[in-house]
Image (cartoon, rainbow, N blue to C red; front, side, top):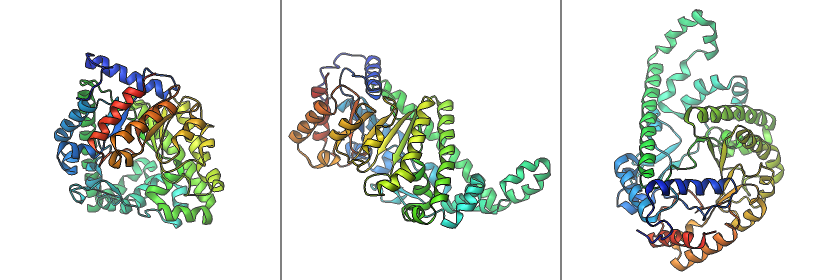
Length: 422
């Protein structure tokens, strides 16, 4: 176990409470006792444990054992392995991902496979009745085992009550029956995975590591929602020029859908955090004029609505947002977390440090290719400047630490405790 005199002799219960308080003090722009450290270890756990990425992913007990050993050795305030799992997607035959051992070699890493599942000519049908279009058109395109849903009658016919029951003949068609059975398999897989995540959180708490603070609903900026899994990057970029009004109307629709989902998720689970990975809004993807019309107003509206309903947005500002930081300063103060990948973390602190909790600071390139002395120097600098006054969580620049040198991970953890004390 790495030296950590600050926590020596404390019980797991005390450590868990202190670490959780440390994180949430930072989230709410307070000054904790020291800078909290979050390690999103990802596939590094497989390297650390001497197992394949597929085993880490598919064998819960093997992966959990490695996660616990990693947590005890490096003693972060929060730690996670890979945050996504393929079981439900495999049950449905999803066409937008590949996983270790499932479309990739056993030591491959999760890949998102972008497709244009929504065509430009689909806008009228989507805007007329989003739910009907999604079930009868989108799902058969995106999931091979849901192709039978294309044979369903208009879903609005269910409002015809008892007189609609003749339409059950369509639901009895072989393709539809198979699709419904596949949904049942996916539900079972999700329930199983949910139980494993709860078990993992309980077992980590017994070691003094609190549940992952970012656990909650997963949503996106309305523009990204339309782009990532429906129009694709090429399609959405053309839509800004060829179909701007339809795109804006579609964004308004998915804003309502995502907000309702996030509120329902919080009510049902009690997890009042919403994670938003942002993909298309960073510097270089679109002009500031386009950002001001198609991206920021809708994202800001969503973030403010979440906050107004007591939900903390945990936003991954992927890529560089150096030219957009002033917009982020418009958000309510002390109500969100901003995790920054390639932005100048020191300018981030200067511009939005009074607005949101800032997270990041450790380049993955240093963890994989740097020296221990470089790790210590970077950690010291970040703790001193970005950590000043609180409101900062130390983390890597992306949620994946595969390839990191273990001596660098150890130096990072020790240096954060050494230089991050307030």
